[in-house]
Image 1 (cartoon, rainbow, N blue to C red):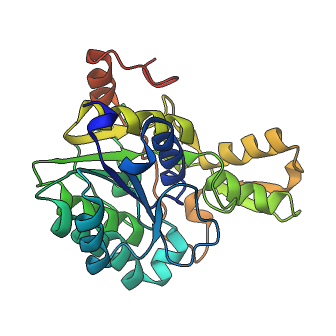
Image 2: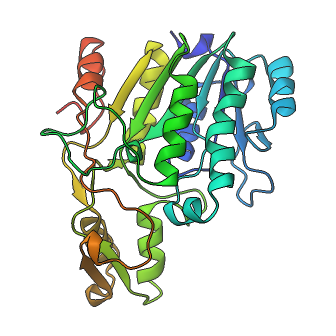
Length: 295
């Protein structure tokens, strides 16, 4: 489906993965055919046609449906901060699950819905050889993972839905405060120590690759569940090493431990690296190349 035929509503456009998707959409869509939603009172309002509202505001969504008339939703809104979700499970449920319900109830009959989910729907306790595939049963252990999985269950039965589970996004955020690299960098550049895990492994994926992937999913009008992550798993500790090397931080500030050594932290996943063969095959069949992914 050419982008010219799409009227796209993008949610969560100030998130770590929503931001690069929003930027990419602005490059291929006219201003009249693209509308973004970001959280209320956001300090860094992106360019373009943007509404600041809570994703659970059904009346607001109904007004968007009436005034903007989207035929495609790319749903990036949600919260996945492990600590905050454990501290405020009701809030996490509201944004992640009730947000998905609001999107479904307002737009399911008229729109394609593409949902950007997370690898945190898996525990990594007994990881399958070669990584988790779409056929593996989710078994989340954190509030963040559980609420994302509940959101998936809201959208997955819809005939016009596509769910993409992302590995851990790596890249700069619109606020400079979101995502793994921003968090580690912000501490190290202020000479604050960082402790990261050797035995938490994720299929980290760069934000520009997420943007490339999202454009192709929309263009190909894809349906079903897919995994999208990098071609090798990263230890969280490796992310710290990357930041130290890239930004010339003090290496002594970076500490590594195993999960069982942490005290009073949120539930931590093990090896939740993902098998992305299904999406690679779909892209290869369509002649789509995402730099560093199809390899």
